[in-house]
Image (tube, rainbow, N blue to C red; front, side):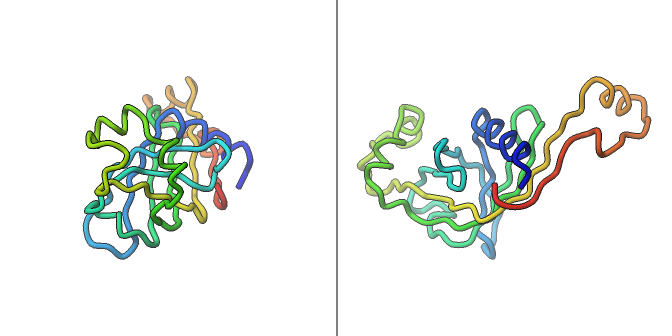
Length: 154
C-alpha cells in the first residue's frame, strides 16, 4: 500500500477510532465498535466486548471505517480472536471502557478481542475549495484531484 495513504489512514483512524465490524458469513448487520490502537502494531486493532456480542465468537471478519471528517474511508479484512495477553488487557483498560463495562476489567463476561488485519482498501479525500466549488456547481471533478486510493497491507 502507498505509504502516504497508509499514514493518512492510521492518523485519521486514531482521531476517530470507530469501525463497523461483522464476521464474514454471519447473518445480521455490522455493528459499531470502538477500536483501540497501538502505534507499534499497525496490523492489529483491539475491542472490548461482552461474551454474547455478535463478533465474540471470532473468525474471519471485515470492518468498515469512515473517519469523522469524511476524509478517509477503508474496508479492512482479517480475523478476530480473543486476546489472551492479560498485560495487554490491563494496559488497554481505561475510564471510557469502564463506562461501558462497570463491573471492571476482571469481569469474566468481558473479553478483549484482537482483529488481525490481513489487508485493506483505503480511500482518502482531499476535496479542497476548488473541488467543493465544482461539486456545488455541478462541474466535473477529476478523480485524480479528489484524493487517493490504495490496496494492500494497512
